[in-house]
Length: 274
Image 1 (cartoon, helix red, strand yellow):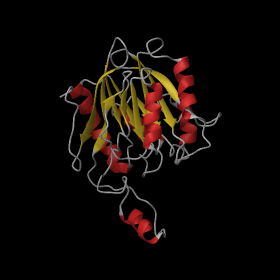
Image 2 (cartoon, rainbow, N blue to C red; image 1 turned 180 degrees about the horizontal axis):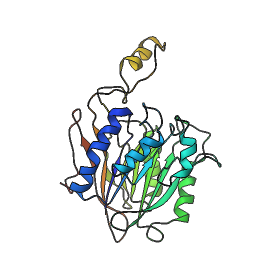
Image 3 (cartoon, helix red, strand yellow; image 1 turned 120 degrees about the vertical axis):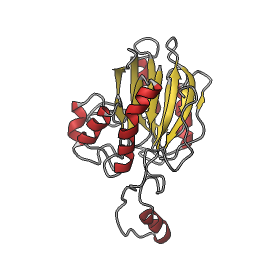
């Protein structure tokens, strides 16, 4: 099974780059399943229903989110209408939408996708992300109810992301971090067979500060005074993510590598798909 995960879409540049490139990637690389993080897709903050649906139309099977999921207030309404829209599973009880779901891939495989948010340097009041994952895996274990398991772990601290990967190692096909918008160089298969990458990076303009026009973030670092809003950078975008080859027999990873396509970063397509 061939699975592609794309990191946080940031603003118009990021989402348009995904929409433009994804149909060709699905066809050329014979992808069975695609997950895209969309929490920064609407002007850099949140996602609208229209953008969500356009991302599905481009070929994404599931759209995950993170701490900006409710920044566009309409998400509080449409979250309950779409199973393919996933918000963090460890949000408080009663939050709209779902934190995980099982979906059918193009090859017929059953894929569990879950979005979980870290607590270190973010929201310590959230439910324990490790116990949230334990409940999800207990209810839908790999190799029994599903053929593949993907966790989008939306977190700030790399140590928390790494520990989460080790916690579910052997019980998930892929753990990929999001939120920091910078692709890490640590794609690997953990000892138990789970593919892991600390951060997928973003889909956006890398001539920026995390996808935002760099002048205002730079000003705030220098002066400590806000002079304007953060606005998404709208130059040519690079899409970043991770590709995984998953065993049809075990549901564990056999190969993993980064994907980067665009003008600013060194391009990379997993060699096993080239």
